[in-house]
Length: 126
Image 1 (cartoon, rainbow, N blue to C red):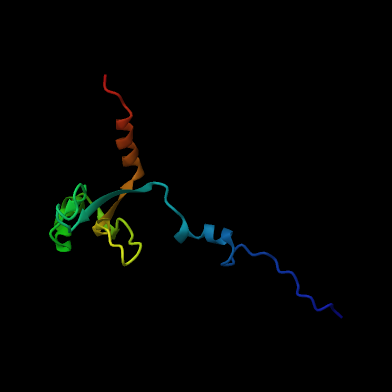
Image 2: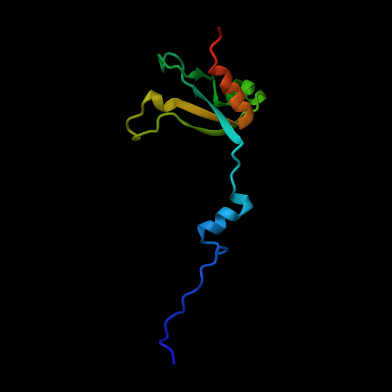
């Protein structure tokens, strides 16, 4: 005769819901020798008269963006996001700042080469 209570199960480290089983899997291990360098470019398709005092790069159309980013592409950067710089708040109140966009580019860099570059910045020439 039993009391019909469920038996307690032994904890298994290999179960999928267990955090320790996740940390032991090679596909989720992180590499510490990899870092990412990012650059961003703010651009607009408005003219200087429509958007005065803006530091954003002015493009005739969105089709001109790849030629503007060509130098960064040649350095190994990849375009990962393109979004409005200022999010619109309501449809009735449009502001010119909503026409400024930001392109975000990243490049995977080796941490050892990054530290050698950064160590040069900390040295004062005599």
